[in-house]
Image 1 (tube, one colour):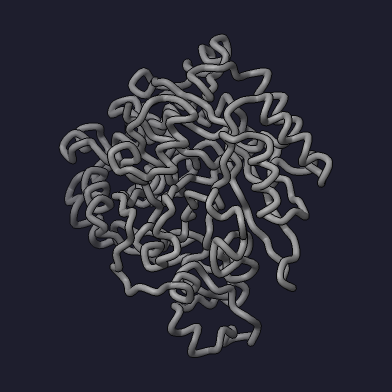
Image 2 (cartoon, rainbow, N blue to C red; image 1 turned 45 degrees about the horizontal axis):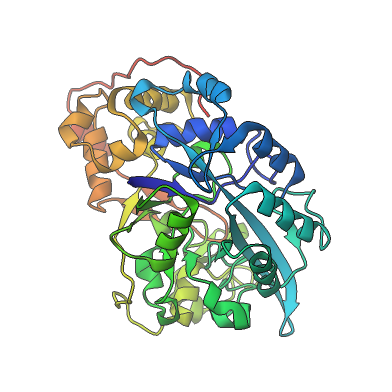
Length: 438
């Protein structure tokens, strides 16, 4: 069975997340996007774990679904063209902050478990180590290697995937607090790490430059902090529908069952290149080296971005090959495309009205972005949308890279080009109910 999965999400119990980030809105957003399997996020938090037990029931082995009564109410907010199966898998992110080899380390790790009893057992062990109640993503003074050991002692079927491995501040290989290899972090348990999450600011091409990642499957997830951020990145599976088959597929990285990933343009990520946001300074790695890693305005250290760190650890030139090479597809969220076309904010009522109208006519977002023909897209009633999506598919867009926590910017059309392409046409907006969206 072919399906899309996004494993890294959060709940309203995590800091800096939307108040409506609950299971119901994740279920709705998954259907709008065309995602079948989503992580529960935050199962280590007692409040969220209670909601999971209250609202979800077992479905296929190791997977869960929303209770029918709740699902029926949620389905009323989903266009018929988008309705489909949604399943949850138990996943939680842990923030490990600890000292190792005389250096403070800050790593984020994704924990997967197959059932609620094992999750409860795992939570109980962490509760004895640190405070798991203060944040949906708990901060523990626990070595990442020891976290993995606790997981393996809890369940042979549990597994750990290091999250957004290149992010400067909180990741396995980050410039500020990471390591220079998987083995340096996980030591004797390194063989149990069979996948890593590339993060929004890198893509598979960048990761292929680092040979010690060759034996690992590269996965991509949204790290969603609000429902409609779901699916910014995602994974494409063609396998049986169960926890064990999903795990096996990720572990093997077989291109027949792990078809590939949907990727943010890495330049749009918050840490793609180097910079100092306070001074409005952004630099490419060669410029950073010229300034010896210091801000040319204030002289303080720059935040070294993902590209710099990849180059620092790389042992291959750009375009180098690796053992596991899976296809990937760059995407731009449909709301951002509409924002560029309509020249208004991506969260504006005008964008959301047109977004919901497009889904009503054309189906889920991933279907529109990746599969619908240009003529079909244009028939839905938003001028330039077909051309915009075609340019996205062909990587013919303008990118201003993100740095030091500032998201990059994407432009598809400039003002003169938009005017020329439109000619005498006037924008007419899809009429769709202004119902509440997730």
